[in-house]
Amino acid sequence: MKIALFGATGGTGRALLAQALERGDEVRALVRDPGKLDVSDPGLTVIAGDVLDPTAVADCLAGTDAVACILGTKPGQEPIESRGTNVILEQMQASGPRRLVVVSSMGVGDSIDQVALAFRLIMQMTLKRIMEDKERQEQLVMASDLDWTIVRPGGLTDGPRTGSYQAGTEKAIRAGRVSRADVADFVLGLLGDRRFLHQTPAIS
Image (cartoon, rainbow, N blue to C red; front, side, top):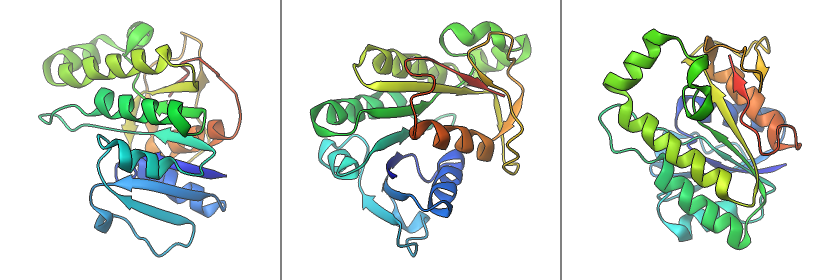
């Protein structure tokens, strides 16, 4: 499979990139600083640029079969999720692939009740702008006519890929901790099929 990857230098993006290359996929990754990635793997093509630049996004999408959007913002930074995703959507609708898997977060949209009260308070105090931007991001994706799936992970850790996680649309799934490597494993599986088409599965 040929994958366009946005957010390759973040924790989940790095995990997905490593897993994709390990299984023999070809990956085109758009990054602002190519020096943050090991470009020695022949399956990886790095495009230097910004996700807000339509030309760079179109270059990343060229010839690919599916798109993984794993954009993230650190607290205190200006959120990039909705603006970057909007550019990706526009370019996909113009000439890119149709399959899109976006990583958002539990606590966004109708998953708010799956999150413990303590984390909701943290969201309001320190992550409010980021979570609000993820809401806008999800709304943009849902309004598109692409073959999208939005993945909502619980609390992310840097643990190993275990393959032992809950994932689905059941509201009984609570926002527990899950490794970025397991989220990447789930996303990578979705890129190649139509499971959870136009749905928002949680993973925990």
